[in-house]
Length: 309
Length: 295
Image 1: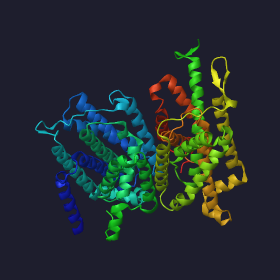
Image 2: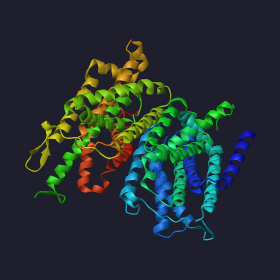
Image 3: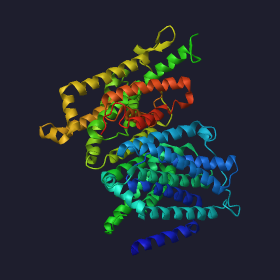
Image 4: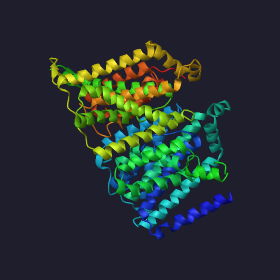
């Protein structure tokens, strides 16, 4: 416990001083957005053992909606974010209601197929800008008081939301609701026999995860100023799985670590090796699945004899 | 000119023909997927990548080694099938003890590797593969021109699907295969080498995907990403037919190709998503799929 607190304190200090260490703030914000996305995903995979293969749909749809509301309708930043999250929540309800009827790989295939519907809608709809995506999305200001145009101000805004989301997920997992989710993870038929309405719990977890993934997507659109088809594509769904798996699914810090590794790798390798990046990503996938199923944080926790969360 | 719902009849028949060709690919691919799932319990995400590799094997064979279409039809599935055998031996085999989702994730990684390698070597743009001389030209059906090659694709695919069905449902080997699907340990106890059978089944399923790739090479552009979105459609087809059901895979593959073609006439914007919508409806109405048994 004490070691855990120490780790969080070090991380918090690092996060606070990061923009002053010569790191590019936009890159840091991108890291935070994907870390948030992976944490939201982990709520499903790690704590409920539901593998969604279409989480890019919520991330991407929310990015598009926020971008569209802010750019075409002149909405404020916070309203735009809320609008995006509301849409991804709605998508989560519809897709989740269909998908939770099946388990395991069926669940994965259904979420994948329905996410593909969202992809094609984004490709063909007018407001998304088709192949070009939405560009020049303004960051706006916080309640008209604090302009977010400055990279450092925006960084602390994103960091604050990230910390809130991270704490929220911890709170959920440690709540009675989270205990039921873990019971479903451990033995679903048993949870049913104990009288829990398992489908309802799973759907709630799914909608929560989709909404938080949407929040990450909205922020990403505001940070980078664009929303594109790659946000909503199957490749993005795969990457968030990899981040969670590599960092350690079912641990709180795992997705954060995984997102950092994957985003940094892509950032620096794509200049060096071009399209071989996807080969490297694929190879990491294979290694993770074959011999490293606990992930980085999971391995560290095991080595130091800590119980998994 | 005859019209149906305000659409000229030849346009409808033309799209139905195209739909039937697409449906043949769906049927071949979902058949392989269903066979693999039935015995291995693995959802093979790399299926689209193997389809792509089959098309590339034909392309490379023609450009570099001068192997013609007919030999490619035999050699490409064999080569890619052997690659599948190797992958089963080296990777998949070690995942049967853990949860099935890891098989899905592993094959997803393998698909990324295969697509990345081909894109690095050949670029992202499409390559064209010529229609073999024997199958050029078309029949005039009076209301439309039917390209011989497309008719050949449908014929070849339906024949292969039929043969596979016969092999699995009506032969001794197929009986063992089905028995191993029910209870692998018991079949092993009877002295049948189940691990080798599993390995060959994966190879055969992969070879079917590669065969579909060779058949597709002359009608579409051969490109590294040709399988990545197709595999998701095929997943939906398999879910609709009922996972692991051989007949379900073949019938729903052909049927959904036709429905997709029809949608292109009636409401083109929805043609990309109609299969997924049908999947959602089927799942609500019959969760095990049209031909699947309730678990």
